[in-house]
Length: 401
Image (cartoon, rainbow, N blue to C red; front, top):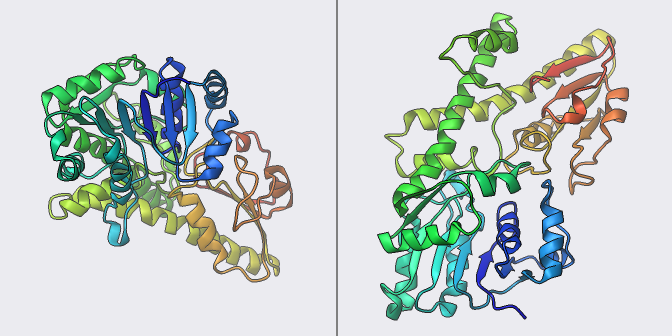
């Protein structure tokens, strides 16, 4: 049995790809997840998420013994915390998962070990975990290394970007930063940028907040253009001909566990200062509500014109195209809101990247389009881009297909 070198806590959308990548570089990894089902799936060489190229690598590293999954951690030299950081009521960051993961490995730590948080975290989280560790293990003060290194990958291209994207690495001191850089240099080809832990934490939040603000501009523009009877897609295309203008594409909101969440980590701690960031969140959340109302209006118009209830296809539930991730998805919110007013109406819920859902019945997109009177395009999945619609169908294009 190989000596365990790395323990990863959390085997989700980032934790599993990270574990697989490290193991693929002949570094023995012990992955930890609270779900026995996830552990069993991985140990069988399979995966529980949709991510191109991931299953091939997982199968390989499990077969070679470089990756083993379990529900409990073991002693190692390096510990990666890759657990979720959701928010509580009123959009306050919840670092309880990070703390629980940290507490689980405190008894295992020894002199010279490296502890790294990859989970998106409020500013100061790494220092809080350092204080927690040293309170319970005072003999380790100045004898272990602690750092923060956020991921910055795109779902659907994770395995490539984990290797090739630059990383920002911030330790609680210079020695910790250098120790973490040495660790990541074993499997990351992108540049490794040294800083301190607080700056690294803020960098992750700022990156996604910046994108949220830019998307909010496009979404707000789409609302204005709808009232002004202007094609927003044509408008943005023309405006982007300017050499210094690059407006993003509007959608039905913003989702995922990064852009839709991270800005709140700043707003929660700095509510008076983060006025643009906070307003962008409001705009992007409102866009989802607006889309749902548009679908309801189209339904009423159809009823008046045709004296019957329309059949409605709601196309897509993932938070972005061509993935199975429904976290914080605006499309899922729209589906839920539209169905709140459902009576005897017939709805077809479409998400080609999942087979079943615990609430909604999933319909094949071809069947849905064939039967629907109203088609609401919520997510620009590849499957939807070559659909031929009937002239008598009402098409609500919220994603620029």
